[in-house]
Length: 205
Image (cartoon, rainbow, N blue to C red; front, side):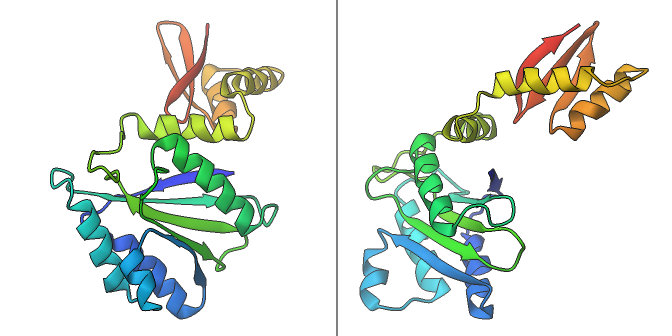
């Protein structure tokens, strides 16, 4: 499972991106929540959705880039869209985007060889406060690992032991091995720090 936080925006440009995919037949709207007036119309345009998101987000004018846009994907089609959607709901609750009244758009995309969905909501909570985004990417990685039942530090130790089982002649080659397993490595004063998702998992001499 991969969760990718995509660029924020002042104008909710992700709505247009996803709706254009819908118009081309390579995406479809999976879920719309709390767009009451739009839903009552029985149909909508991208402008309707953007206007609703902007009006909702205006409750906190201090937040300039209020769009929260992310994608969830899996390897091939090992998970269905519904399974990804269920995972996304749990993830959003953990990240602070799951309160009652929070706007939500979910699109399923069919233009790649792997199942993936896109989420659009606002960084403004229903009560007008800003949803916490401090260390967002680090927290996101940890939430994903926890929901998948993985312990990121234990996995780092296992992957390090696998890397150390290979023959290598320099620290550069060791770091390249860890990079190939999805880690960042840097060394300072004789200690190698191994990071994943922006967080240090372990340090080794």
